[in-house]
Image 1: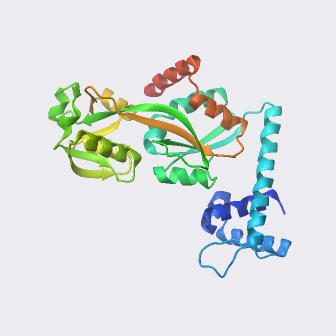
Image 2: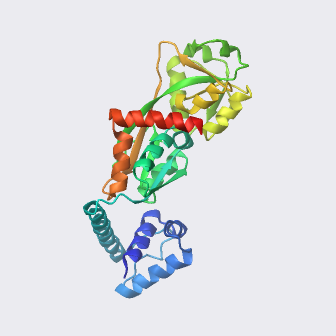
Length: 310
């Protein structure tokens, strides 16, 4: 038995999916099945209860899974400690996040990080919010970045920062002549929002409920880029994170209005699975994303300026 065998088996148990385990390890579903049968033959036990319709481990399979997790943890811990002893900051960091954070919040941090640690490779996957949590819980991703973080006993939640929600309209909309607006003025307007399961949509619903106003929903989308395009053609107005519309506002494609006498914050957070061994590279990235160091902030500001020039 090799450590890779236990990794594939653990991924299979945690995802309860042969296809998912295959994708996580870059092999075929058939190879996952063969690995499972090889482990059953090696230990002379039945690992999966095949009499059940749903994926279920036998008692022996459960014991094997618990031991496999211990071995994988010790193996990852050893690798991490050896890297720290050699002062090596390298490897690949997998991040799962939603479009609004991945496209508008994360890039300056990644730019600063890679300039300092060029031997690290960062891969970003864009997912719906619920899938980001699933990616972390199934150990298929190292770090997640989400808005309006939800508590979970298996997750470590670290505050990133708070974004500000603003009203966004087309330059052709009557509101475009204003610099700010009362939330009550949104009542009765054609509104372009996110789909109901998107955290920012749930937040705007709460805002409207607390303000006791109703809007006319005309379109719903699952990502911020499509919402912005709909607002640009004056199909309606929207409430969006301020950082996601900086470029469009500068180009005159959208008009951004802050709310009078009220600030609506959108908390962002970094998440990873509790008990996961963090490599030196992951630790350094977490430090950057959660640090309030003034020098780091200055670097980020320069990175944002440079990114805008590219």
